[in-house]
Length: 110
Length: 112
Image 1 (cartoon, chains in turn cyan, yellow):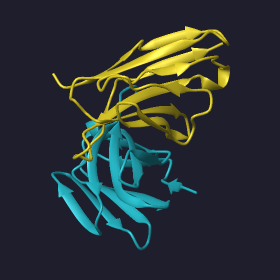
Image 2 (image 1 turned 120 degrees about the horizontal axis):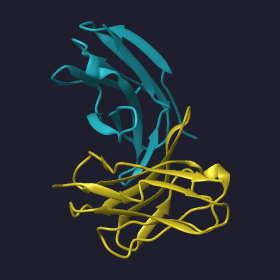
Image 3 (image 1 turned 30 degrees about the vertical axis):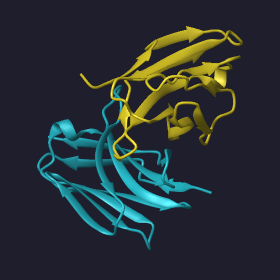
Image 4 (image 1 turned 120 degrees about the vertical axis):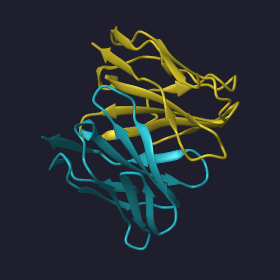
């Protein structure tokens, strides 16, 4: 079966760095995705990893270790607008089968 | 403007009254999906489609139907809604050569 775990909530301070972890157990792994979702809005794509290593995109970076079933999203220079839920998702196979984790709600405090 | 649209955005209905939530995308995407989002459970995939007339079940298909007669449209049908289908529903699409999914604005459904 599929299982994806993330911390439920995290709190960090404006200007700081925060790391949101995601662990997964799934079959037919074909990529790990991170999405951002502000309250009351649709998820928006942040990053994609299919090979081991770090992908950097501005203030956001995402890391993947396939052998450990582990990923993290790193947010640097936190801003108040980064307060949102962060969703980890795994794609299975080459089609459109996605499994999402429960999401991590991040609160950025002044 | 490239977008995924859903209608209605909000719906309150009663148990057993058939309803359809429409989803349309203007990006010529092959892949489309329906998800429901519930507190503590995250997004769960209901059905997905990889092209016209090609659909498959996701993780929670019970009580739902879909059809894909045209590339741009992917309606979600609840033949006999029940209170446990009260949820926030998202439609999404992506190009077969891309990995980014584009989500619609969501439909909040309440079944009493």
